[in-house]
Picture 1 (cartoon, rainbow, N blue to C red):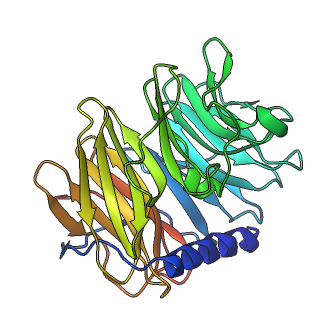
Picture 2 (picture 1 turned 90 degrees about the vertical axis):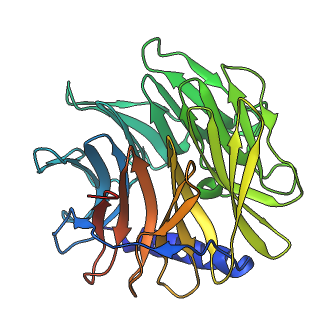
Length: 329
């Protein structure tokens, strides 16, 4: 694996944590994660959908996409090349990721049924994709006023720009996500990171309710979540797109709410600190309970959730592995 990429991820997290110092503090729950990967190389950037997990794997000297079936306990190597693959996402039988095989980051798609690869962007460039069913969204790299958040319908092959114009900022904070025909992202074009949403192909609407910085958005059904930083504090924001109601879960030192994900009633995030000991937290919207999933001296990064299954990358064994946790399991 090109370790420069992992180094950049870690440096970004530390820099962001130093810029604002707060994170939710909750009850520490019993830690019973399952180590999914055991290879001595690095495995990073996991994503999950149902009983399938994907990640970036360095065991062959590059950065390949791997697929793991939880029920069968089987691993499958998806990509086989020297390009750097990043930020995989999975929905059903489809996997998307950011791939540099052309010399420029592009978005690629793999169908696990047909075992075929297809480029989604073809020369325009693309970062941090997300997928739900037949739709893929990403931060598009085409020049001038043509860039922004784009979506492709995989059935019709139609590509549409979702944002009203170019989108600026760090791709990891912009972090486009979708649920059904609703797309969410953050944009720094106005000078501060602000979360936007487009529903049913409609015009983008700002979800900003203050001057605080918003980022790392995620969505499930009619619930949108993001990290909000302002006045020296950090909060998890839960926004109901149907009612317009917002809930803020205030945090305290010593970290920052980052890399959020949501599935139904459950929200996960990474408490980013400058100590290289970031932990994973879980919030249950209905009960209001916050659970600290990890509490050791290792680093746990980039959590994702599907149903009640949570995955993340973890260096407690001395190299980066993928871990899986199911609350109550």
